[in-house]
Image (cartoon, rainbow, N blue to C red; front, top):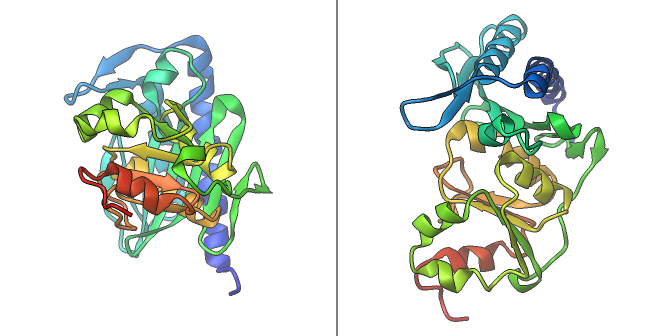
Length: 261
């Protein structure tokens, strides 16, 4: 199938938007910023707000009829079938503490399906990107998921052990010994590792759409599988991403009573 040239052009816009966010974020990362708590108790900084505002201004010029949904400023409706989803700083807590494992997430949905995604880990100078039918790339080089075929051989990532405990309850004790390694390489950084084949799977029990949408085209185009925890291949309120080969086994381990094989 010939790659859709329109999606290629829209991916270029997404990458430019990520560069705009970088130019806002990195000086503030180096100098430090004040922190506020939002109504849900999560932190927000001036860098989050300024980066999202800069991306929105750029998209309004480049794609004036597109809708935009962002973590900091909500949704602005457009007239086309396209909608951008923005998380200007995914991993704000890392950003605040000068841990370089944060990034900007930019996604584009077409009629509700994520078709363009960017994970830009600015402090590490690594950007993963994909558009449907165009493959997945890291800094312009093609990437593929790993070839590990079982959870027992796998490096599995999650953002928070506490989050896993809340989601799995007593089942966490049964899950913890299953992977070869379980690492808390959190937020978008972890999904970049899965797409590059540096890790084999990542799990997050709670996700917002602006956190999840960019991951879908990147993991898919890198040859992996990404679903909700109950196996639905859509953006939902949880994410399980893997190299595909161990996905069914991984989902079974997340169920209260895994089927006996």
